[in-house]
Amino acid sequence: MRSSNPVFSRRGFSRDNGYAGFNTAPQAGYAQGNPYAQNPYATNPYAQQDVQQGAPPQAPATTGRMTMDDVVLRSAMTLGTVAVGAALAWALLPVSTTSYGLAFGSAIVAMVLALIQSFKRTPVPALILGYAAFEGVFLGVISEMYNSRWSGAPFQAVLGTMAVTGATLLVYKAGWIRVTARYARIGMAIAIAFVLVMAVNLLLVAFGVAGDGGLRSFGPLGAIVGIIAILLGAFFLTLDFKQIEDGIAYGAPKNEAWLAAFGLTLTLVWIYVEMLRLVAIFSSND
Image (cartoon, rainbow, N blue to C red; front, side):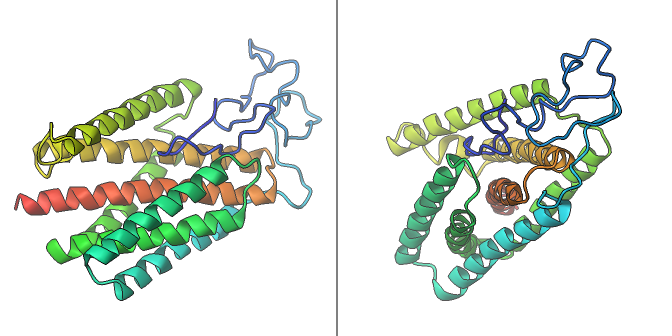
Protein backbone atom coordinates (compact mmCIF):
# COMPACT_ATOMS: atom_id res chain seq x y z
CA MET A 1 0.00 0.00 0.00
CA ARG A 2 1.25 3.45 -0.80
CA SER A 3 1.15 6.18 1.74
CA SER A 4 -0.10 9.54 0.67
CA ASN A 5 -0.49 13.13 1.69
CA PRO A 6 -3.62 15.26 1.46
CA VAL A 7 -3.39 15.55 -2.30
CA PHE A 8 -3.41 11.71 -2.43
CA SER A 9 -0.64 11.73 -4.99
CA ARG A 10 2.74 11.41 -3.30
CA ARG A 11 4.52 8.11 -3.90
CA GLY A 12 6.58 8.41 -0.74
CA PHE A 13 9.30 5.78 -0.75
CA SER A 14 7.23 3.31 -2.79
CA ARG A 15 8.85 1.70 -5.78
CA ASP A 16 7.80 -0.94 -8.28
CA ASN A 17 9.11 -3.74 -6.08
CA GLY A 18 6.68 -2.95 -3.33
CA TYR A 19 8.48 -1.08 -0.56
CA ALA A 20 5.99 1.34 0.91
CA GLY A 21 7.22 2.15 4.37
CA PHE A 22 4.56 1.37 6.90
CA ASN A 23 3.27 -1.98 5.66
CA THR A 24 6.35 -3.75 4.36
CA ALA A 25 8.56 -3.49 7.42
CA PRO A 26 9.23 -6.99 8.76
CA GLN A 27 9.00 -7.39 12.50
CA ALA A 28 11.10 -9.42 14.91
CA GLY A 29 10.28 -13.10 15.32
CA TYR A 30 10.24 -14.16 11.68
CA ALA A 31 9.83 -17.85 12.44
CA GLN A 32 6.55 -17.46 14.33
CA GLY A 33 3.99 -17.21 11.58
CA ASN A 34 5.52 -14.15 9.98
CA PRO A 35 4.99 -14.14 6.19
CA TYR A 36 8.53 -12.75 5.79
CA ALA A 37 10.10 -15.65 7.70
CA GLN A 38 11.85 -17.19 4.69
CA ASN A 39 13.15 -13.92 3.33
CA PRO A 40 12.33 -10.91 5.46
CA TYR A 41 14.16 -8.62 3.05
CA ALA A 42 12.24 -9.63 -0.07
CA THR A 43 10.06 -6.52 -0.07
CA ASN A 44 12.82 -4.12 0.93
CA PRO A 45 15.04 -2.99 -1.96
CA TYR A 46 17.40 -1.13 0.35
CA ALA A 47 18.16 -3.62 3.12
CA GLN A 48 21.17 -5.92 3.19
CA GLN A 49 21.06 -9.45 4.55
CA ASP A 50 21.85 -9.56 8.25
CA VAL A 51 24.12 -12.39 9.33
CA GLN A 52 22.04 -13.00 12.43
CA GLN A 53 18.70 -14.59 11.53
CA GLY A 54 15.78 -12.95 13.25
CA ALA A 55 17.53 -9.61 13.73
CA PRO A 56 15.70 -6.59 12.36
CA PRO A 57 17.11 -5.18 9.14
CA GLN A 58 19.73 -2.52 9.57
CA ALA A 59 20.63 0.35 7.30
CA PRO A 60 23.66 -0.44 5.14
CA ALA A 61 26.93 0.90 6.45
CA THR A 62 27.82 2.29 3.04
CA THR A 63 27.62 5.98 2.30
CA GLY A 64 24.97 7.59 0.14
CA ARG A 65 22.10 6.51 2.38
CA MET A 66 19.42 8.72 3.83
CA THR A 67 19.91 9.93 7.40
CA MET A 68 17.80 12.03 9.74
CA ASP A 69 20.18 14.92 9.16
CA ASP A 70 19.46 14.70 5.43
CA VAL A 71 15.71 14.80 6.08
CA VAL A 72 16.04 17.76 8.47
CA LEU A 73 18.25 19.69 6.02
CA ARG A 74 15.98 19.13 2.98
CA SER A 75 12.88 19.88 5.04
CA ALA A 76 14.46 23.11 6.28
CA MET A 77 15.30 24.08 2.69
CA THR A 78 11.79 23.31 1.44
CA LEU A 79 9.92 24.93 4.31
CA GLY A 80 12.35 27.85 4.23
CA THR A 81 11.49 28.39 0.56
CA VAL A 82 7.79 28.41 1.47
CA ALA A 83 8.46 30.95 4.22
CA VAL A 84 10.53 33.23 1.96
CA GLY A 85 7.87 33.10 -0.77
CA ALA A 86 5.16 33.90 1.76
CA ALA A 87 7.13 36.79 3.27
CA LEU A 88 7.82 38.33 -0.13
CA ALA A 89 4.19 38.00 -1.19
CA TRP A 90 3.02 39.55 2.07
CA ALA A 91 5.43 42.47 1.72
CA LEU A 92 5.10 43.14 -2.02
CA LEU A 93 1.51 42.23 -2.84
CA PRO A 94 -1.10 44.42 -1.12
CA VAL A 95 -4.55 42.95 -0.54
CA SER A 96 -6.37 43.53 -3.82
CA THR A 97 -8.14 41.73 -6.63
CA THR A 98 -4.83 41.50 -8.48
CA SER A 99 -3.07 39.82 -5.57
CA TYR A 100 -5.94 37.35 -5.24
CA GLY A 101 -5.51 36.48 -8.91
CA LEU A 102 -1.77 35.97 -8.41
CA ALA A 103 -2.46 33.80 -5.37
CA PHE A 104 -4.88 31.64 -7.34
CA GLY A 105 -2.40 31.34 -10.21
CA SER A 106 0.43 30.44 -7.82
CA ALA A 107 -1.74 27.77 -6.19
CA ILE A 108 -2.46 26.22 -9.61
CA VAL A 109 1.25 26.22 -10.55
CA ALA A 110 2.18 24.72 -7.17
CA MET A 111 -0.43 21.99 -7.61
CA VAL A 112 0.85 21.15 -11.10
CA LEU A 113 4.46 20.96 -9.90
CA ALA A 114 3.40 18.77 -6.97
CA LEU A 115 1.51 16.40 -9.27
CA ILE A 116 4.45 16.17 -11.68
CA GLN A 117 6.77 15.28 -8.80
CA SER A 118 4.24 12.76 -7.51
CA PHE A 119 4.44 10.80 -10.76
CA LYS A 120 8.23 10.95 -11.00
CA ARG A 121 10.12 7.79 -10.13
CA THR A 122 12.82 9.82 -8.38
CA PRO A 123 12.72 13.14 -6.51
CA VAL A 124 13.53 16.27 -8.52
CA PRO A 125 14.74 19.02 -6.15
CA ALA A 126 13.92 21.77 -8.67
CA LEU A 127 10.29 20.63 -8.82
CA ILE A 128 10.02 20.38 -5.05
CA LEU A 129 11.58 23.80 -4.42
CA GLY A 130 9.52 25.30 -7.25
CA TYR A 131 6.38 23.92 -5.63
CA ALA A 132 7.50 25.39 -2.29
CA ALA A 133 8.12 28.84 -3.82
CA PHE A 134 4.73 29.10 -5.53
CA GLU A 135 2.96 27.63 -2.52
CA GLY A 136 4.67 30.27 -0.43
CA VAL A 137 3.31 33.06 -2.64
CA PHE A 138 -0.20 31.64 -2.27
CA LEU A 139 0.13 31.35 1.51
CA GLY A 140 1.56 34.84 1.79
CA VAL A 141 -1.39 36.43 -0.01
CA ILE A 142 -4.10 34.53 1.84
CA SER A 143 -2.34 35.04 5.16
CA GLU A 144 -2.27 38.79 4.57
CA MET A 145 -5.93 38.66 3.58
CA TYR A 146 -6.87 36.87 6.81
CA ASN A 147 -4.68 39.19 8.86
CA SER A 148 -6.35 42.27 7.40
CA ARG A 149 -9.68 41.05 8.74
CA TRP A 150 -8.63 39.01 11.77
CA SER A 151 -5.48 40.62 13.11
CA GLY A 152 -2.92 38.09 14.28
CA ALA A 153 -4.67 35.08 12.68
CA PRO A 154 -1.60 33.93 10.66
CA PHE A 155 0.64 34.04 13.75
CA GLN A 156 -1.90 32.02 15.73
CA ALA A 157 -2.20 29.57 12.82
CA VAL A 158 1.59 29.10 12.77
CA LEU A 159 1.59 28.41 16.50
CA GLY A 160 -1.33 26.00 16.08
CA THR A 161 0.46 24.16 13.27
CA MET A 162 3.58 23.84 15.41
CA ALA A 163 1.49 22.57 18.33
CA VAL A 164 -0.27 19.93 16.19
CA THR A 165 3.04 18.81 14.68
CA GLY A 166 4.78 18.62 18.04
CA ALA A 167 1.90 16.77 19.69
CA THR A 168 1.66 14.30 16.80
CA LEU A 169 5.40 13.62 16.91
CA LEU A 170 5.25 13.13 20.69
CA VAL A 171 2.35 10.70 20.44
CA TYR A 172 4.05 8.83 17.59
CA LYS A 173 7.43 8.54 19.33
CA ALA A 174 5.75 7.46 22.57
CA GLY A 175 4.18 4.56 20.69
CA TRP A 176 0.61 5.60 21.44
CA ILE A 177 -0.13 5.36 17.73
CA ARG A 178 1.01 2.36 15.70
CA VAL A 179 1.12 3.03 11.98
CA THR A 180 0.00 -0.26 10.52
CA ALA A 181 -1.52 -1.16 7.16
CA ARG A 182 -4.98 -1.33 8.76
CA TYR A 183 -4.50 2.08 10.39
CA ALA A 184 -3.44 3.55 7.05
CA ARG A 185 -6.36 1.99 5.15
CA ILE A 186 -8.94 3.30 7.60
CA GLY A 187 -7.37 6.76 7.67
CA MET A 188 -7.11 6.95 3.89
CA ALA A 189 -10.74 5.88 3.50
CA ILE A 190 -11.81 8.69 5.83
CA ALA A 191 -9.56 11.19 4.04
CA ILE A 192 -10.88 10.27 0.60
CA ALA A 193 -14.46 10.51 1.85
CA PHE A 194 -13.67 13.93 3.34
CA VAL A 195 -12.23 15.24 0.07
CA LEU A 196 -15.19 13.92 -1.93
CA VAL A 197 -17.66 15.56 0.46
CA MET A 198 -15.73 18.85 0.23
CA ALA A 199 -15.75 18.63 -3.58
CA VAL A 200 -19.52 18.14 -3.61
CA ASN A 201 -19.91 21.00 -1.15
CA LEU A 202 -17.84 23.25 -3.42
CA LEU A 203 -20.07 22.44 -6.38
CA LEU A 204 -23.21 23.12 -4.35
CA VAL A 205 -21.84 26.48 -3.24
CA ALA A 206 -20.75 27.36 -6.80
CA PHE A 207 -24.26 26.69 -8.14
CA GLY A 208 -25.93 28.54 -5.30
CA VAL A 209 -27.53 25.46 -3.76
CA ALA A 210 -25.63 25.83 -0.48
CA GLY A 211 -25.26 29.36 0.86
CA ASP A 212 -22.56 30.90 3.05
CA GLY A 213 -19.99 28.29 2.09
CA GLY A 214 -22.09 25.28 3.04
CA LEU A 215 -19.97 22.95 5.16
CA ARG A 216 -17.12 25.45 4.98
CA SER A 217 -19.08 28.31 6.50
CA PHE A 218 -17.69 30.48 9.29
CA GLY A 219 -20.04 28.98 11.83
CA PRO A 220 -20.10 25.98 14.20
CA LEU A 221 -20.44 23.49 11.32
CA GLY A 222 -17.44 25.03 9.59
CA ALA A 223 -15.45 24.77 12.82
CA ILE A 224 -16.27 21.06 13.14
CA VAL A 225 -15.21 20.44 9.55
CA GLY A 226 -12.00 22.39 10.16
CA ILE A 227 -11.16 20.31 13.23
CA ILE A 228 -11.73 17.10 11.23
CA ALA A 229 -9.42 18.44 8.51
CA ILE A 230 -6.69 19.20 11.07
CA LEU A 231 -7.02 15.72 12.56
CA LEU A 232 -6.59 14.29 9.06
CA GLY A 233 -3.47 16.41 8.72
CA ALA A 234 -2.15 14.85 11.93
CA PHE A 235 -2.94 11.42 10.48
CA PHE A 236 -0.87 12.21 7.40
CA LEU A 237 1.96 13.36 9.64
CA THR A 238 2.08 9.94 11.28
CA LEU A 239 2.39 8.33 7.85
CA ASP A 240 5.21 10.75 7.01
CA PHE A 241 7.03 9.98 10.26
CA LYS A 242 6.73 6.24 9.69
CA GLN A 243 7.98 6.43 6.13
CA ILE A 244 10.97 8.52 7.18
CA GLU A 245 11.74 6.15 10.04
CA ASP A 246 11.53 3.08 7.80
CA GLY A 247 13.46 4.74 4.99
CA ILE A 248 16.37 5.45 7.34
CA ALA A 249 16.22 1.98 8.91
CA TYR A 250 16.24 0.28 5.51
CA GLY A 251 18.97 2.47 4.05
CA ALA A 252 16.97 4.40 1.46
CA PRO A 253 19.11 6.40 -1.00
CA LYS A 254 20.14 9.84 0.20
CA ASN A 255 18.08 11.67 -2.41
CA GLU A 256 14.92 10.14 -0.95
CA ALA A 257 15.25 12.78 1.77
CA TRP A 258 13.79 15.20 -0.77
CA LEU A 259 10.63 13.07 -0.90
CA ALA A 260 10.43 13.17 2.87
CA ALA A 261 10.75 16.96 2.80
CA PHE A 262 8.14 17.18 0.04
CA GLY A 263 5.66 15.06 1.97
CA LEU A 264 6.13 16.95 5.21
CA THR A 265 5.69 20.28 3.42
CA LEU A 266 2.45 19.15 1.79
CA THR A 267 1.07 18.04 5.13
CA LEU A 268 2.17 21.14 7.05
CA VAL A 269 0.67 23.43 4.41
CA TRP A 270 -2.62 21.50 4.70
CA ILE A 271 -2.62 21.90 8.51
CA TYR A 272 -1.68 25.60 8.36
CA VAL A 273 -4.45 26.51 5.91
CA GLU A 274 -7.05 24.65 7.96
CA MET A 275 -5.72 26.18 11.16
CA LEU A 276 -5.95 29.64 9.58
CA ARG A 277 -9.62 29.08 8.78
CA LEU A 278 -10.29 27.71 12.25
CA VAL A 279 -8.69 30.72 13.94
CA ALA A 280 -10.81 33.01 11.75
CA ILE A 281 -13.98 31.13 12.66
CA PHE A 282 -13.32 31.38 16.39
CA SER A 283 -12.34 35.05 16.04
CA SER A 284 -15.58 35.74 14.16
CA ASN A 285 -17.63 34.26 16.99
CA ASP A 286 -15.97 36.32 19.71
